[in-house]
Image 1 (cartoon, one colour):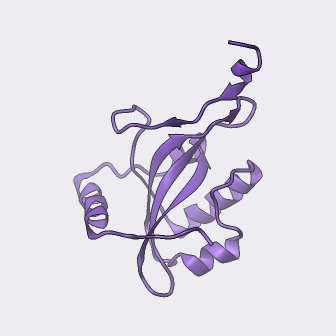
Image 2 (cartoon, helix red, strand yellow; image 1 turned 90 degrees about the vertical axis):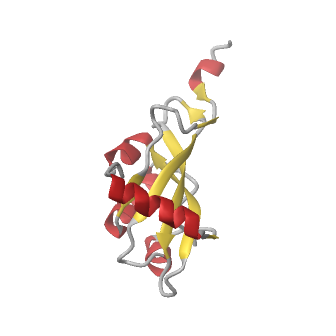
Length: 136
């Protein structure tokens, strides 16, 4: 390992049995905060603007967020995840799934969907299917 290798994190998939794997939920207010934090940290899988977020996401949505990868990058930058993001669109109320980047700290600060009722709702969303869409 060279000195340069020690300063770069490699992208790694997060398995379902990984201790950091969990399902989190987020409101529109949380999504707005996550967007601002992602922009400050120069993360790439985010909405192009707050206006785009507000146009695409139904304000009453409860988004479901699940980590897919630990992002790679410099060890001088905050650890971050690339996550699956499920939400209800506005104005047509379609279920949408996309990808979003967020810092590990931001992800861990979101409420965990851990009780049986919340987890059944997550399963229902997954079973009912979602349309894959890019973030606007």
